[in-house]
Amino acid sequence: MAWRPAGKNKSSNKSHVSRHTKSSSSLSLSSSSSSSSSSCSPTLQILAFETAKCMVRLVALYKSLSDDEFHRLRNGIMKSPGVVTLNSDDETYLLSLACEEMLENLDQAAATVSRLGKKCIDVELSKFDTAYHNMKQGIIDARTLDFNTEHVVKTIDQMEKYACSTSVLYASLVGVDEMEISKRKKWRQNSGSKIDYFNEEISSRRKQVIHFRKISLWNQTFDKIVALMAQIVAVIFVRICTVFEPFVSSLPCITAKNRNFNRLHYNSNPKSPKGVTFRLSSITKIDKFITKIRYMDVNTEKNQMLVQSAPENTVGAAGLALRYANVIIMAEAYFYSSKMITNDAREYMFEMLPMNLKQMLRGKLKSHWHKDAEAREGQQGVAEGWKAALEEIFEWLAPVAHDTLQWQQERNLEQQNLDAKPTVLLLQTLHFSDLERTEAAIVEILVGLSCIYRYENRGKRGGIC
Image (cartoon, rainbow, N blue to C red; front, side, top):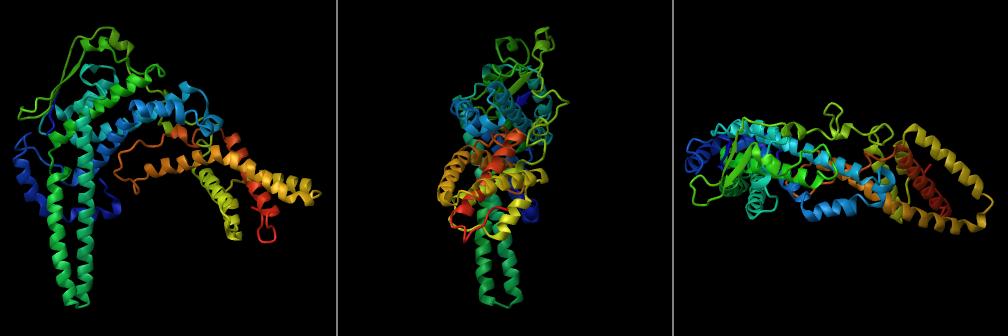
């Protein structure tokens, strides 16, 4: 297979971009005709924004697999008090979760690359889905796919620049559209001077759009961009196998033994008119070794997605991860705030709890009120004791709750941005947390918060419920 190198697109704003598609056709085609890949190779145009998102996903995944990030995962994230207390202290189990999530993210990116590849002029590029399937079967030569080579680092930098310029292009297109809307409003109001201003501003911004189209993914060919991303997909897959294979036995073993099968080569000769060229040669003779390194999903339950694989005794299986994260974060905010909790706020937080937790909370509160009724003189001491206890709990519980919200936001299509930094992993969230332990911790902080509010300035404040 020859691989030749040849955004942010919210659903509500698709019309902003599509209105400018026709006007850019001549520009895109003229640039395309001078492309080093092929005079006939089409340019991405409106697909630039989807491509930019895919690039960002690949760059973020690449960065998350660096030596520093992998060390942070093993010695920081996995050993954090919240993960150890609520999720697991089993390193192999946690690493298997991280590995599976990264592979799923890579699968999603590879699916986009395969879909874009179908539009390539190069017939071999259109078969990337077959190449990726072979990679996951262990049919790959790792010799030319070193993770941190100068060539790969330059490719990553180039992808980041493309994603950034495409993001700016999107913002420019939306800005032009908004200016045109304002112009029409002023025209209806017969504001002549304002219309002149808008005409000048719109003309200036359209020139910016033309510039950003030239330097962004909009004007790049399918063949060039698919080749870049296909290379990084292969590099990331080999890296995942390399760093996780000692802990996840079902991964292919990327060793010299693979070199007798399909080989992935590249030639980065800058003098070549076609730039970087990749070729995956087909080897028809495959011996028994290949059957031993067939790729198997970490989770073998019918290719079940990781988010669907939480055990029955977890918060994720109960569908309560996001709700509990919000309760914890609200309680944390009230704990560190000097303001009162209003009746509406107390009722809202209480109603967020499922029935079993409401009953558990009421029972605990009644027990504390009865126990402390005879100790009225020591009320301030009780409040201080609860403050110290809650501060200790929030230190390990709050980070898991915040990571749960961040994980959700990073995967919310309406909130995706083109920030290519490592993302939060599912193992850092409440999804795999033990349900009983999590609920006990939530009840504890709500009881403590009620006691603090009851015994400290209780004339002005009330309890949680």
